[in-house]
Image (cartoon, rainbow over all chains, first blue to last red; front, side, top):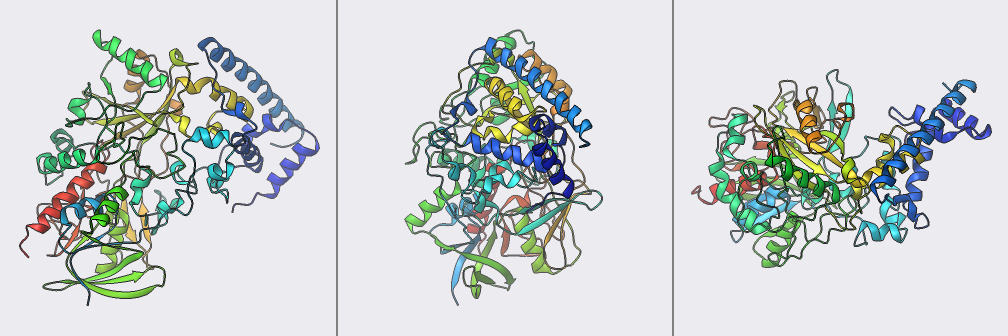
Length: 96
Length: 525
């Protein structure tokens, strides 16, 4: 079992208590091994959602070439926005 | 004392191949023979997902999530609870150039060995393959009759196409496994561009797989339920367990599962074996006229090193370290995904280069999508959305090149008999720019920055610890498998292969084990 460091716990506590953009902050912490506690928590939710019959849309592949490109574009834009927001929040709340 | 004419250690591809030759001649197979602790009780991944079988998918003890903290803790094919038994054998550590610990690995004590999780590509080595590596004391012609027999016995699916000269011919080839849209797209583009000879160097075709697309010798066709990452190979994918079951049913060999070879002592006319009963740890002694070691490259090397008690002695060690490369085919995006598929879709090679390669193209939908999300540099929800858009037009290339022993890559034992593999030398695929250019002509796009190499020893194509030689020196083997100074102890697994051509060595291990077993039958003592 790999335990999280005190810093990781503090980061997660800050994200939760201040209601920061966890999804936008997590990619900035994702690299390295062992994974950051925040990455582990969000990935765990992803796995549970994927394996839960209540979320059949999790593995719903996009049909149609145009729809695929539109979804790629919108995901990149929305994801990019969250990344930017997450980074700014990390600076603002001293999570770097 | 119990006596057998032949004792074969291990029930993996080498062991069963030798046993087929030595049945009906007082042969015993000694095998730890671990079996799955749980069963994946779903016919397909889709079925498991639709009924929310998170216990089956993630493990009742969350075994599949073992990579959450350390992404390189377990190979993706070895995490599921029904597959965890496959690598519970002798432990080994892999260290890098500065002695840093890179990987903690284990050999296999499973019945059927590592073949429980193989991709089932069974390929011949051709004379050109062995000429390239240049250090094999036998030729492809020595293996040819055994390749032919094994392919007929196992049942191989594939196609007669541009890869024929690379893969060799197979009599009575079964139809190839079904294609997914991205693979069919590539094949169509390849057929069109080949007419104009526009593709520089890349040859492409269907893989040769021990996956039945029709019933064969009493085994049913594979159901293509995408369970390869969750369960051992089923009846439609060849697994040495099928042969073991056959042999036991025929009653032509004795099978001692739950038994582990501890040591052996060679005398003039027999070998005395010390064997541990795994469950009770009781030790028993038996005798045999011929011992065939097929425990897997690392475990066999360990046994031989322990037997000779030469502390500090190191052995060469070779593996195929693959280069992994995701490739995207925009022309195939949005295609309807099939419910049934097999991971290995295409096989290719960059022709006309001095160093040969083998490129296997995999379809990743048989994994949990959550496994792939961390590799997409976006928030997890956006990454999932991106993957949903890309999956229909995506393949992952796994690329091997010929691999010869490197001076720095060595296997040894520490004072407690534990295996350490020093593996500082590995390289990414040498022809990446040329491959990327060829792929673009087929409508495929990849970034060099996305190419990666998994940790050392994750190729699982181990070889060369006790290499065959015409005139073997210490810790080498004769071409009939005998250890350098032995009359009766032979090695039949990947240990004896001096190097690795670009193709995987699974069928060659089996053919060579059969060749060595025949040498035992005709040795006259």
